[in-house]
Each structure stands twice: as structure tokens, then as C-alpha cells.
Length: 172
Image (cartoon, rainbow, N blue to C red):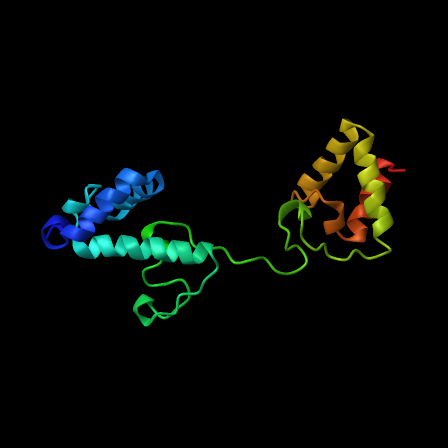
């Protein structure tokens, strides 16, 4: 049955939200395109489909506020795993990184892994060498790309690899 026939009140509420909220209108249209029949007219959708969209919004809202949904009707798992955002084409929530590189690429904001005090001077020498000029920086990059899997942070390599580069390139 169409939403307009059995759920006139719900369809009317959807129409009002479409008129008054650009965010609702855009999210609803994308939801209909991805999971519905392509019609964003709520009277062309079943009541079950309309309610599933409300559940989708509630799940997304709860996730953005860091809330855990434990209602058994939602699958009794966090964030409504059975009808949550991941089921409707939205990306799954990411887990926070843990460990020494919690800050992600570049370490901005994360806790850096402690560097072996014996290795620190080697790291500092290579970093200073890279700042010397572009040719020196490119020499380090080429060494990393061909020997160290493309990882260009000297702190992420063992002392032996750093010593080899220093010796072979005459790093002061």
C-alpha cells in the first residue's frame, strides 16, 4: 500500500519536512534513490519505508552524538546494527585509532611512539639533510620508495636502514 493511503499523517509530516528543511529534503531524496523506488514523494512509499527512514535518521543522529542504541527492536547491538546507517548505504562508523600512531598520518594530535634514544640522532640528521635542498629530499624519497616501502618518515625505520642511507649519501 502507498504511504498516502495508509499513513496520511506520516506522509504529510514528510511533505512538511521536505518543504521546511533542505537537509531533510536532500537526505530523503538520497535515501529514496538508494533504497526506495526512486520517488521522493512520501505518498508513493509504504508506511514501513517511511518508518525505516525515521529509524535511519535516529540511528545517524545517535551515532553523531555518541549514543548507544540498545532497544531490542534495533537488533540489540550498538547503533542499531540490523537497521543502522551501514544498511542504508551510509559509511559505517569508524573506530577510534589506538596505539602509538593514534593521531593518523603525520601524527598530528596523536601520541607518537617513543623513539629509541640511540636512533634519535640518526633521525635528526636525515631530517636536517632533507631540509638542505630539494635534491637531498628527493634522494631520501627515492631511497624510501625503493627500499623502505615508500614510508618517508625516518622515525618509522630501524637504525640500520638509517645508517645505510647516511653512509651511502654522505649525510653530515
